[in-house]
Amino acid sequence: MSDVRSDTVSDAVLDDRTALLDLLARWDRWLDESRFTADETAEIFTSDAEAVTPGGTSRGIEALTAQAARSHRRWAATQHLHTDPVVEIDGDRATIGINRLIFTVADDPARAPEAVPAPALTLGERCRVDAARTADGWRITRLGGTLLWASDPEVLARVAARSQEEAAA
Image 1 (cartoon, rainbow, N blue to C red):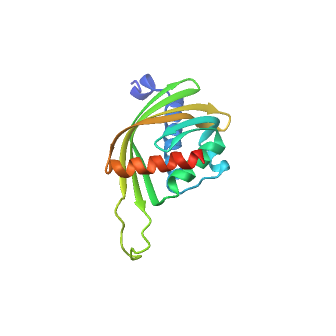
Image 2 (cartoon, rainbow, N blue to C red):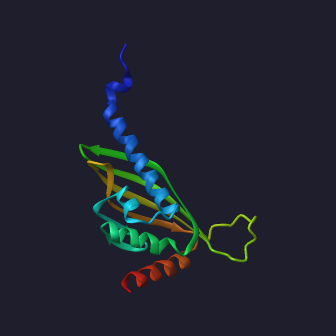
């Protein structure tokens, strides 16, 4: 009897796919838990990685760390979710296409501690993540996306403009 899985997908490819999906989850957690240190960033990105986001374009560990911290400090909480990953592996390189949902919660000092906040801004984007196998495992080399919708486009425009002003300062 033939094993269908072994006939179509090798264990090594499945291991790589699992590692790449884990990398995406660690990227989401890095953002949502505001773990913006160079060491944490280097666990996810290569030293020369590039990110193109609504907050601007950055290259390298220090710039990626600074951009993420700057873009996320204005929110009391964020939740980044990715869906429908399409993983294409070519040796030590991979491309992952995902749909991404981003929920942001504004800081509201007047909110009662037991109250559950509503998102201030919700975004939907289609994202491409490029990754490379390194001596320390898979790392993101480049990411960028196309914003498809925003729950409040005016808020998004203000946030993006503020992020770019802060980056220039």
